[in-house]
Length: 296
Length: 271
Image (tube, rainbow over the protein chains, first blue to last red):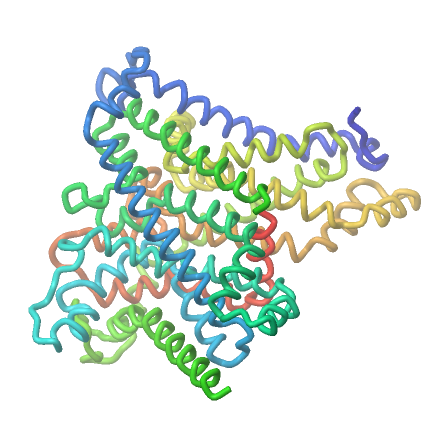
């Protein structure tokens, strides 16, 4: 097979090449950045000081450090908790339930509900962080309207329940994506299929488990692929809300990588963390892509 | 049938309740923004006024708003232009392995943005680009793989017969692109532009590392810096600032809601 171009592109070859050049340069830059990260994960490069210029190759030392020092494994576990509860349990399951509940509902309630959850999705990350910090502060909404009327003393939620708080904030922010995707998917299931199951005596629960879920296999895998990768690599909300604290309770991997690279200045170690994250993301992608392809 | 009605009523009540929960955090933001004597309290405005908004649109805050507008508009325009210019030939020239090439690029972007930030920082420092212009270039680089894939798929849907006919009539490449291809794919180009715009408007990490002075911050970093300061936090100002910062993304979405919803679903379902 040979490259073949339609005649108007072949005759305007100069213009075509000029048009493609900027994209080509930027793509080469992206490839360069990726190769750079992999290469420097084998060095002891630092942000400032003598090692910012006279760095050395140190083999697999950075990778060994990932497993021998505590930081990385703790952050990996925090990331797994954060991703599992906010993306899979929270956004995906809740988004699916919302979509099922809204199915065939065309009232004003549907519009109001969609606007409500979209507001969270559209809100810039830093504003969402500020909003939740204030909502959960001593004199914030939850303490004023729920905790104090119950006769309890105000709770400083972010200090006491940091990880659940960022998980809830992320569910609040991200559920709209899963809802929209599942809504579109449910609309694509023919009405007759579900009616037929109803006539055959399937209960609402059976209809969901035995008819709807298997038909949505592809959509569920797509949704999980996107949201787990986004959540696993999500940085601004947590960083702006807690900075990884208190202590290291909410230091998920992107925050850990940022703190190691730009806080402590260990760029080589930071690069090794990035490569480890890339491997996790790659593994997740392969897993979901297989789930998408295999028939039940 | 009675139990069915009952059931759907309960569902409606539950959903209405969920909607109220979802918007409730905004109550504090709005009440505080319109209170000229705001504190970190949930209460009705003690002195109703728009002084906070005047403050959030002037001086340093106004400058940061302009910085955000520059970063977002420049990134969206550059991404769409560079992407479209390369995606059209990619769509029309049959090269073996071009789809594999595009998917490889998308896989490359699975590397978390936080992961490639270090080489981007070094390159920008070396080129003297630790400023908002550097942020625009860096964001364009990070946007490009997805943009190329989306725009190539978009141009694939433009019927090639029209271009063939125009060529036979003697149209040049430039005329074909500007008078046939671009007008036919305008809606898709707008969606790509909108996504790049909101992405750049929202961006926090790159300007956090790139911007050196308060006058150079976009609103994301400005807001973060302001509420990170310990001590006297001006909550009324911050709330108004947040609303000004959030308004464009929300406003544009609701203007384009119908088109974008199908766009979202399309992107997601196609995978």
